[in-house]
Image (cartoon, rainbow, N blue to C red; front, side, top):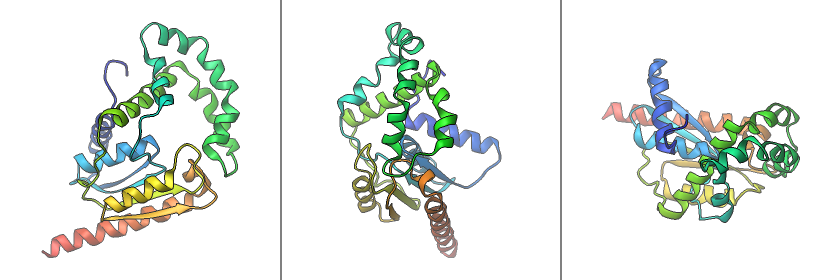
Length: 223
């Protein structure tokens, strides 16, 4: 909703509140792309409730990028609003095939994903959300020093070897080096959409993190 800055921390609190309302006590969080930042915030802010996190194609150490700053233009008052409701939706649809090649490559594009998300992603309200999160990522890159050594829960890190949006394997190994309680898996022949190219790799990582979490809880109870 308009009227609040939906940072990773704000989204983390919202999702945890939803889990509590559903009566979920301990849970594992899986976050893809921007969602990886939200998952890490949940682990940081709710270590008593988050049993572990699995991060897929996360941009863990963002650097300032000009295109990220430009992507925030649609959230500007008046001009941005007019742009989102006039020129931007048809431009998104025209460039949709290129966008799909960019996020799926080098893997094959999912026809089902492409068909079901094209209209959703070109809605003015969705375009505003995408622009806001891109701009928040730029703000974090420009003014916030990434810190992850305060994460205490088990962390699974997955990246596609051929991610064309950024060097996801390098990001994954850097985070793995910063977190003693982490495991990493680089999926060959996969791009940014690892969870659609290799869902079994994501499921296997969830199982690993669940096992590590159970082991840690058992060790703590023995003490």
